[in-house]
Length: 415
Ligand code: FHN
Image (cartoon, rainbow, N blue to C red; front, top):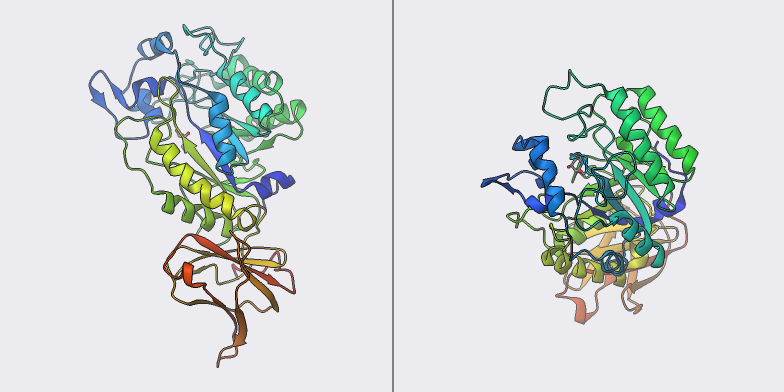
């Protein structure tokens, strides 16, 4: 069972992923050719030669990037950590790297160390900072892996010694406390090579958590597939990396945004099953985050803030019901929470929680609610909670219930 042994990660529940690199300048289109796939893969999908692609760095002048603004907003949305792409598969470092001039300071007119800006903003607003680093795929380095292409000629060892390991050392040395090292697509990385990376991370920052995509089962928590939610509550520490539309990097033609309501439901569903939701934004080539992302996240943030106690530090539901026709349950210690996503009429009923209920209340206001525990003719325990008149045609609110006994942490749900 994956265990980070770090309470902050177990309690965090909601984080912000930021995918940003040179691909944002192309925004899904190169020389009139578009990609309708994830836009940060444009170099790979459209077979853009390395010498052509790297010229994008000369255009990198993100006048609209404001690290503080993003961090402040993430805080307001209730997010507890940020994971930023220090180097994605394209190979471009978004910080001042000594071991490769292909970076946001040396190769650009703006000469900005983006990671430093983000680090300072995170420190100022007390936000945990994690770093994404593409350890195997590097489409710029002749010895890095390139997915979907022939890799028989590469000398991965060479790339590890020249670029990957030295860059990991840099990002773990020059940018303060790093909460997570977020590896991705290990490709042909051997167990020994993954161990080298783990050792380096832990030598430099013993408390830095390593995600599941280090590969070779060496991660300290499970990273699910992109946008993939386990069907049932899942044991241990885990996280779902997810998009707001269909891309990570900015794509000007991707307007397939999820609604705020969908995102709230996904967040609570993931929390109810025991996981964290790492939700992405992709700034454009100038560093501006799409307005639509803000619009969605402002609404999600309003729900999260109003119902914080029913989200943060919750535990996975130990047994059914996890979901009901009107919404999803979360729990922690002596409390059970009913997140209501569809209007219910005058009451809700929750079956099968064997406990003594002491109190029911509206989480956002603290208003006490009338409740009645009982047993069905089949002798199943239930609790019924009366919905106040003003809420009877509403959705997206939460009811808290206090119980005599703590919810058990574990029950053999996969039996
Ligand atoms: O290939 C990457 C992709 O571009 C993106 O970074 C996601 C985020 O989880 N990870 C890989 C695909 O799973």
